[in-house]
View 1 (tube, helix red, strand yellow):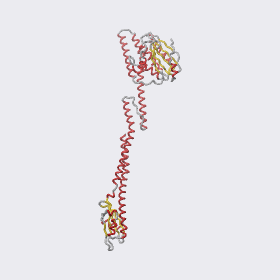
View 2 (cartoon, rainbow, N blue to C red):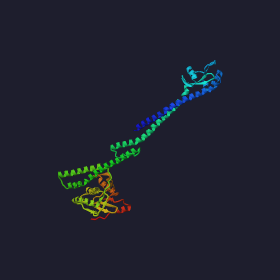
View 3 (tube, helix red, strand yellow):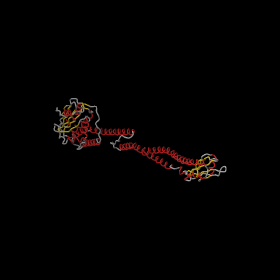
Length: 451
């Protein structure tokens, strides 16, 4: 496109320059010729008064010498003989004698092309005949200044062409640069660089194309991240039935069949962990949800986990789940977060370890506490960071990450600390609306535990 613009500009400017420069050059040439002939006409007219007075050779010779053309030996006079008066021929003639006689006979001025220039023939009436004054105009006088004028015209035309090409090149570069960036960004996006974007500048059409490309790239990133996150979340939700399988497999006793079952469950857990680690490399934020009753979800999930806890001899208590507690979180997301926290209890504490789930509701927020009587968390900060991808020691790290994203989607947060049971405590703060600092500080007070 850039070279096309340059070629078009070059062609148009060249045609304009030719259309104006050629006629101007011809006009300049014609003006120079007219100027030289007009000057010769004045030289010839200067001799006419002397011819009107006398046709004697001596006075006429003096009159010719006083003119510029006479001083340069470029003027001549022919007075034909008549009535016994002899002819007078002064100066050097350049025109043929036939042209001189014709001019004298007709009495009309004429310009004759002669070797080396032009001869201006001007008839002048004398007493008994017609004299002819001839002024020779060299070719140098006819073309004087023409070459310089043509060079000036050519220089101006060339400057106009170069200037138009430079302007077209700059305009083309300004138009091409956004298009090149857009093409390069599209190529890089196709190669997998999902973070590539292009600045929205240049002509209006290219700005619109850049905006559409950026919107498309953002959409692609969101779709891919949502697919990965969906795969990770679904895989993590498999942890719940896997936990049941692992507990049941542990109670099968000894034997080849039991060992194969436990090995299969362990292999399945490893494959699920690998899917989670691979899928969560890029995560999308939790999408806005219509909301649900947190107390209802907790009661439903506790009914499931209580059966497993009874099989392992774990003591379970729930507090605050008997009153409605609406939160701006989808039911499936909240259930996945609760399963992640309770699954960690079963996974990382020995059998027989007690745990509890407390719900504290206020006008500003709902707080969910999951506590256990296990060994606790040696480094709570590291456990929270692992939720962002540390994933060490047999954990993918996605469990707390699911909980975190659910909490942060409401403007809340997650904290890990020491529980009143002596083990770990995970506090999930789900904001109902943007809290003020005093209201939030009051809502963070630990609720009393009920049996």
